[in-house]
Amino acid sequence: MKKTTLMVVMLVAAMGAWAAPAPAITGAIRTANGVQKGAIKWSNKNKAYSIAQKKGGTVLDVVIKADDVEELMIDKPQGWDNAVGQVQRGAGAGAIKYFERIAKEYAHLQWDLGASRYLAEAYLSANNAEKALEVCKPIVEADPKAAWKGELAPSYWKSLLLLNKKSTLEAALAKAANSGDRFASGSALIMRGDLILANGGESAENFKLALTDGYLRVVLLYTDKPVCDEVRPEALYKAAKCFEKMGQAARADMMRSTLKKEHGTSPWATK
Image 1: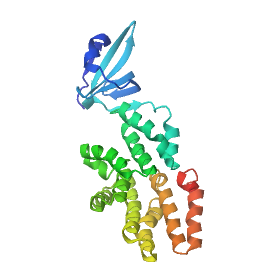
Image 2: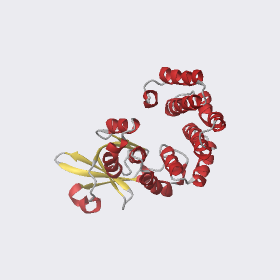
Image 3: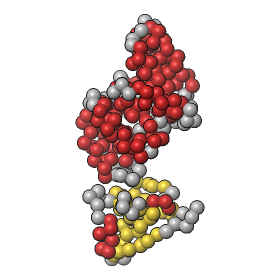
């Protein structure tokens, strides 16, 4: 670890270099030299963070280069849990403006990627896959791994599926399946089931294939925490739907019972 470079300047002198429309965000930054706390801003021009701190009667800026940051510890945005709940309940249209604001104000400040994920989900909830893909594309272009790994990927995949961009989706799912990341591979299996049904329609054979190649693999193989809480509820819900469509009510009930018993707090348990 190289030695962290800290440049401390008076706030008045730094205003020109750090002027930005986004407000300062409260939090802390950990570096090799310790933890700095205060009101944090990101400068895209300088590729660095500034933390406003009071030293006696003077407000100073502690400037930390992005390469020197070991950990960002930014307070959760006010209203976050409520807006996420809206998206999870399928009422994401009402959270669009909130997540648009958070994605902008928290750029490079820990919560931006999550805000983009839920913004895409909110647009999907509002039946606007074009806008959802518009949110995802610049992130994927900046970091190609975001197409198949991480919290944004499932939203990106759903957008591709709804817009019939199946070759791009297949390529992303193949990478996710081989990534070694449990969340990515589990989410990819669920999307694989969705893709099978989208390609072949609602036939008994397709429901069976979606189960065996997608949903049931997650139900049976992804029981380890914390990943099971992330992917298994959706798989159980969709498996129940498939069994129901196949006329296998007992197996559908078993899936729903497991969902409510083991993942009762998940939004999928109340659908």
